[in-house]
Image (tube, rainbow, N blue to C red):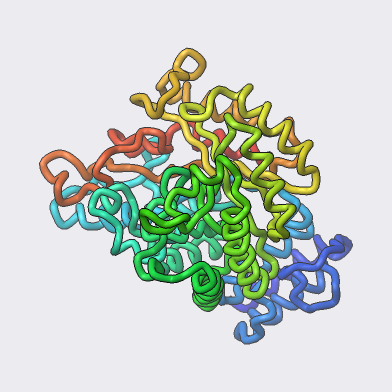
Length: 451
């Protein structure tokens, strides 16, 4: 084995000896200020000598192995990962589906698997999507999902820190970029609900600011120790109208309505929370990029006001994150208008579509888009292709993430539905067909965003 490794690494050394990259990241494992063939050699020597030098852990997964060599080679050939576009999906429910597919075997169901377009079984979804051109994945985190309602648990509110550690480590080990999505709630956080976690409900604003710093810091420390260091961190999910809303009857109970009239006190409270969260991110994961995630694509004035408020109040972040679902936010001209205004208003910020999706069967949402994209495999694929074409017209757009692509109840229904199913209601805008377990053509289309 050692001779074989030496042969492979010697070949890599000869091939890459003349290539040099100038930026400093985790790929600069020898700390000389450059990323080049000497960093490859450092990792090779570490592997051959037992992998004891953790400075050689280029991908931050807590181990030193061939995946770290791959990270450095990618950096040398493709440049700084922070400048490259990323594509993937939010795969927060993957471990639950995998567990239920294994459970199905005990009931004699041996078909409950993820399958490719040719009906071949996929043994490891994360490795497989990497092979299809994905280079990133996103996972959400709730403070204590055990406090969520039964309805919300049945819809996917299950991701505690242990769940995120497992998925994050697998994502990093696959050589992909990992996006962590803090919900800062025990349940779904979105423009209509930003409920403060039950354990934080009695904290005043100052105490809440301290708590969000400590919670963010502690989670990131545990993720790093688990080999799941995030590359991107969302400090809040769809926070167009604030977060950590207070109980009914308090000034913070309905910040959505308050933000519409832009009272200064609410913006100040909100900014202080984000500043505290961002401070923890910079301290614990200095190489990670901070994302502020909003979703007001049809109301561009709200988007611009939001990020102007962030700028004026000194909130530290790197990336504007947007949700875009055509069945909620309108057709692609609406998105183009929003992107045009946002890119011109904030020319120094990168942009990512951190959530998108479109159905392959049955309608979703409020806007009928079927005359443009039929509810078929081909319609879903065409939406994906058209979206990518639109996004490539904006150089600041660097990321595209499909929401809930892993939805796949194949083999988990029928008479055993009550035992085996994962979600109480099927979401038909994923990238696997519930009825067949087969990947849809849109999944294969996503790679063109980065090619």
